[in-house]
Amino acid sequence: MQHPVLACRQVSRLYGARASEFIKDGHITTDNVQTLQEAGITPAIFNVDLDIERGKTFVIMGLSGSGKSTLLRCLAGLTPPSAGQILFESKDLFGFSEADLIQIHRHQMGMVFQHFALLPHLTVLGNVAFPLEIQGRPRAEREEIARQMIRLVGLEGREHRFPAQLSGGQQQRVGIARSLAGDPDVWFLDEPFSALDPLIRREMQAEVIRLQGMLKKTIVFITHDFEEAVRVADRIAIMKDGLVEQIGTAEELLVSPATDYVRAFTRDAPRAHILTARSIMTTPPPAGPFGGEVSATDRVISFARQLDASSLPLAVIEDNEIIGAIDRAMLLDILIGPNAQAVGA
Ligand SMILES: Nc1ncnc2c1ncn2[C@@H]1O[C@H](COP(=O)(O)OP(=O)(O)OP(=O)(O)O)[C@@H](O)[C@H]1O
Image (cartoon, rainbow, N blue to C red):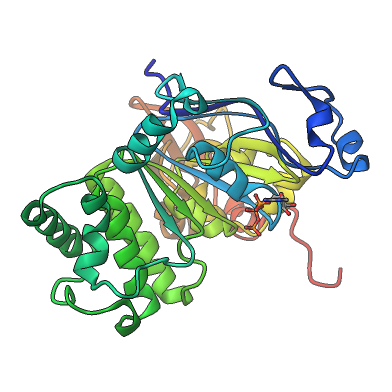
């Protein structure tokens, strides 16, 4: 198996005047979060273990204050952990010299934040070319790359505008183009779209998916919106009070939530878009007849109409074999959730 691009090994970050009393030889001296809290310490992240695979989109989710930004900043080499190790390409990220870390930031990592952080006195072209200027590339080369990036995010023709002359969505496109200009290996996006209107937000999510399809970056994406996570993620980590509650695909989180918190977090998820035939089918399948066939990996949304119109169950196929069946009565459970209750009930 390929090594992960980024990994956390027992990573914690503590805040508070007495934090150092609880750190010895690179480890936290207690497993008990409450002990830390009683000493006035905030474990912004606590004993986090995770692997981020190459070319995949890893989403970090959780409510405000759960530790998402701290985790991202540790992964990006911006905030050193109080204990544990961040591995970047299997090497200790905070073991690099400051000069090497600067080179990693310039050449291998790109970042987009919620507030676009564009340079107001530079044009779109100037903003997008800025990281290339820092890299020391010649003017002609950086302008050519910047123009390509501007085209990539659909802002052609607006190269000479200033940030204040752009809408929020357009500004964030500039942020995206700028973060990609240096051709980073890892692309960090910290709630990149939460300041945008819902419609623009969906457009930008589609944009990330489109860019990811073309560029195959490794992405670390923070959001507190599960629907957004479902749209962009390969895998999702759900955080609560500095702890990672569970890591899995959206479907794994829905089908086998590890904690009540994860179950509650995913309660309003768009189930038909997430669940596949495999995770809802009954086995062994009945002898038939069947009203049609679906593949085990098909999402419910793709065959919901066919199922609704069929009085017979659908056969679920894998490797040319019938491995299960789905009937119409299941559709309601999926669409409204098996334990849904009327409001006020
Ligand atoms: N520099 C700091 N000094 C003290 N406490 C901090 C610092 N940075 C973060 N914290 C605390 O650590 C916890 C996690 O913060 P963090 O910003 O990582 O959460 P978050 O999930 O990103 O929240 P949000 O969604 O609101 O951005 C919070 O309780 C926060 O107050």
